[in-house]
Amino acid sequence: MTDWQTVTEMLTSPLMQRALIAAALVGLAAPVIGTYLVQRRLALLGDGVGHVALTGVAAGWLVGNAMALTPHDVLAIPGAIVAAVVGAILIEVVRARGRTSGDVALALLFYGGIAGGVLLIGIAGGTNANLMAYLFGSISTVSVSDLWLIVGMGVGVLVVGLGLRTALFAVCQDEDFARSTGLPVRALNLTIAVVAALTVTVSMRVVGLLLVSAVMIVPVAVAQLVASSFGRTMAVAMGVGVVVCVTGLVITYIRPLAPGAMIVVLAIALYAVTAALRPVVARVRGRAATAHRDPHPDLPDDVVLTKEGS
Image (cartoon, rainbow, N blue to C red; front, side, top):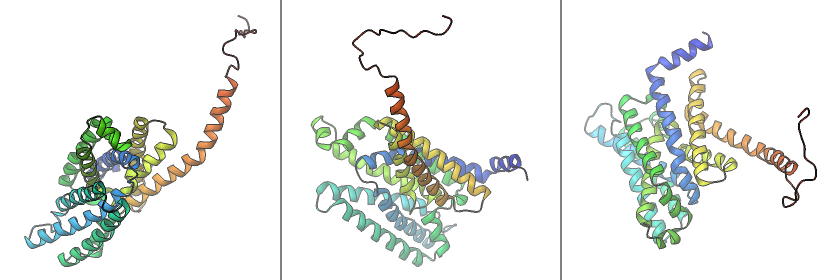
């Protein structure tokens, strides 16, 4: 089979069409909320929420099994959404009241979420294969109903993340200053937490609950190496997210590799290459700026360069 036939077959496959749309949307939406989390130094919040979402997946599975629904995991994603939102709000409340530090609250979510999820899936009759599909992603299982749910939540994340960008940035940068300007800081903090939870559930099918935080954070880390402002960082991160998600998915269509792991490895490799090239680019730009810099801009030039023949 030629390369063109492979591409044609990939683009005409309904399964790959759904997978590519889901991957592109996740790559676009996840870095948006990741930019706010990095700004607030809560880069691991997505990881903690992902662990809690596993408990929601298992609880949905258990309820679907008890109600004899087919398939038994039909309520897995709704369960994950509820658990992730509750977990994100809980950690925000704990952080805001200051009764315990943010990293301790995250640790409680990590351990409680993963343990509860494993126990409930075992009780519901799930297998290790089912568990691995949710932990590390299984984009080949994206159904039409899953795709509509991903599209709806992804659009919601983009609308909130981009529409409230100024207010959310102010809260992430300096809560006291934002409060002094009259912004509803508590409501905006809860908004960030809820949108982060929705982003985790949107990304769950593509990269898995254990790797979802990487798609939210690593593109932002790459963007911070080349962008100098908050808006540009978010824009570059969204571009990087789409490129690594779609490229990783295409590679795993050609080679039998895990899509979620491939996407994360590509993102980290891109970060390493960008970090390695950054000093070289900065040195070249510095030399160019020095060569064209006028040491006495306030004095008229005593030599005027003209083109030959003019």
